[in-house]
Amino acid sequence: MAFAIKAEVKDPLAETFSFAAQKTMYGGKHIAEGDTIFVFASENEGGQGLVARGVVTSSEAIPKRSDRERQTPRVSVAIRRTALATRRLGRDELKRFKDWSDGRPETELNFKFYRQATNKIVSLSHGTAAFLDGFF
Image 1 (cartoon, helix red, strand yellow):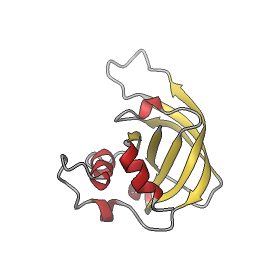
Image 2 (tube, rainbow, N blue to C red):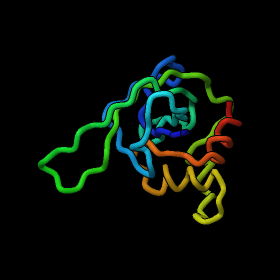
Image 3 (cartoon, rainbow, N blue to C red):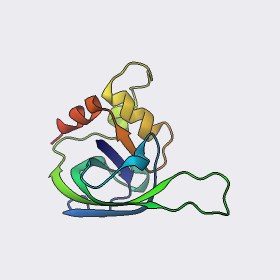
């Protein structure tokens, strides 16, 4: 399966990435070791959008807290980078794709990442993963 993460990325050229207790949405809680993941440097923290593709080397679900009624599942992941993006893809490139039912990969990314702009891990359709592969 393929996933994408939008998070603060301190070094976009790093060989490995580690993200602790990341919010998951749209199937992101199913991420597992060996999955392909696309790394987006969050524009909320000064990033530029898509920076890398990698493989999940570890995934650990964070236990829910008993003192909270509603909680978004969270996962800690480690990633080994396999490629650096060669073209830009971020909020500016995706914001015009707002027809939520058009089936376009750009629309899926805009919906999952920027409709609610929090950082998160999301699952991707096969078509969107293939689209993102074209940026490497």
